[in-house]
Image (cartoon, rainbow, N blue to C red):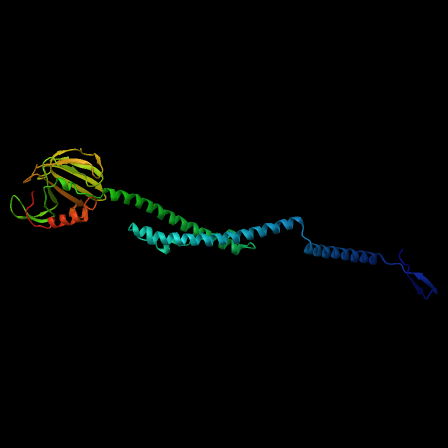
Length: 323
């Protein structure tokens, strides 16, 4: 019960009740309400500072999870970058060196991304710097992986071509040593058997009886098997690819036809004495990019070191060729 307050009235010489005015009632009520609101706000702030709601706890857990994942991704990127750097080093200094192709420069492998800001959408968050850094490193790593993948595709193709090249290059003597009468003439300047003038002999002559087997010296296909080339008589030309062509002239007969695929060591014809020839023999040439080269360097496939040395000595004798 509210206390009743009095005041002394000097005119009536008596005590009178103090009656509060309505304005004061309203003022007091407003002050109480304001105090109550302030108290509630302070209480809410203190409560929420000390105690978290379930939703806030969940959001906090999610944020910590995201941060942990970003840190793990950053560590994985470092490890992957180290592995990729090792592959890039081997690619440049082993694989590409072996296949005689230029290494890929670091500027090309590790080039960044120019132009507009690719990461603007990631700005403005609590962990923006970390997220942008990880995303940027992942983009760079992805680009490096793409460059390396293309390089390895090229190496695989080069390896396949290298295998084909090794099989295609003329690498054996086209007539077996046991069937040779002699190695009559080598590559170089020789005396022409008909004119007696010095003339560049563009192949090697192997003396052997008519009918002696002649073998393909490398994989390829028969480009020609005819006698429509002046002086060669019946002859065969094999296209090996990679710029190589081998020629077998003065044959007595063919064992292949034009367009036929052959393998190294296949029987393709027989020694003869057709065309411009002074005796039964095989005239053998090798051309690289349409230029005749010395066949002496292409017998590593079936000659021993001793046989090769003997052939070299015989081929260096400047005598008379047989065609």
